[in-house]
Image 1 (cartoon, helix red, strand yellow):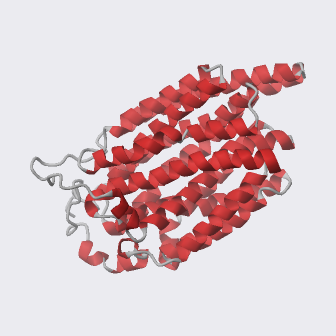
Image 2: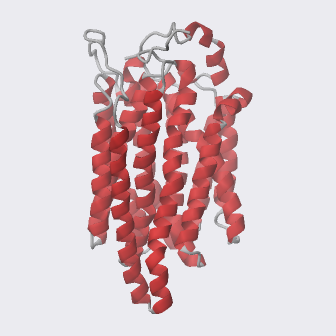
Image 3: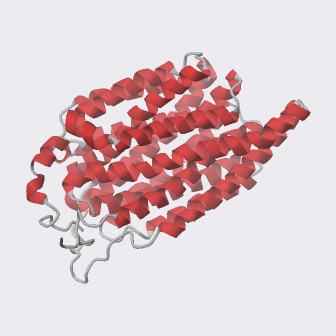
Length: 434
């Protein structure tokens, strides 16, 4: 049997495995840091509105940096963004752990978000560039398993570290000030541990991007205007669906600890619940290919966003912990569909020489949602209670469900149509996409 060529789309996928491993550690650090930041902010005297602002600042710097980074990546290498992203994540986590004011925590949270953006733009561009069209749903699905693994382990680790000494202090003293001091200490420790976890990503950042032979890269032509990319059919729907799904995940991570504090649920239990959601997302992405063959991309997006919206709104109800666990498992499974399929939708709809920019615009939409949604959630929580933001997110997912039903453009064709023509694009015949 002839050996598969790693330089060709469809070739050896060792690069994808290394990328998934690196992403798992980077995302694990972020997923550990986000609830730890919320607990540390609470210990420093933050209320629901302040939590929303700090969560929003995480996305503020990336909001302005995404498109320039995407432009650079369209006509250059993607891999250099990965170690830069890991360094910023690790630094943001460590410095958030040493910050002693809400303003400083918000600033370092923004650095953490910028690092996550650098890593994700570089990684997504590598997957898009090194995958044949018929492989993109599968490869993006496998890539996002790395994120889900990080989201599975990170909250458990954060809950364990934050509640470990904090619970003991509460049992011994019982004073509110003692509990706050213990939580400030343990949440800071969790952030330092998150920085170490992020640094482990460096061990997998080798031979991920294939080398381009001299003279094979196309010369840089005129840049495709952003407004043209945004007007391409399929791109706006993919951006909004991704925004809705990520906003739901983000607010869930930031506000479930607040809900737990109000309902008397221990941080360790909240960590387990968040990790259960992530485990369900992993399960979803493992069975994504057969679900796509059965339903197609548009129907699968619409159904999962619809069910996810209903379940997300149901989190506002004062249900027992076991029912909350079931709801989060269903929600995690539904949310697992939106991110990888929206990546494929945007990549296949965008002009070929502007795919990294299109992915960056998708990430800009994500970060816009991460700025606006926490701020809106903070206002809603301040007026209607800590569970009310979940109703807002439910409505957002229902709108995304309606967009998922709309016919995608030529680039966002249903996965069954792509596979129908994949024989002509078999690994040996796929042209290289640089």
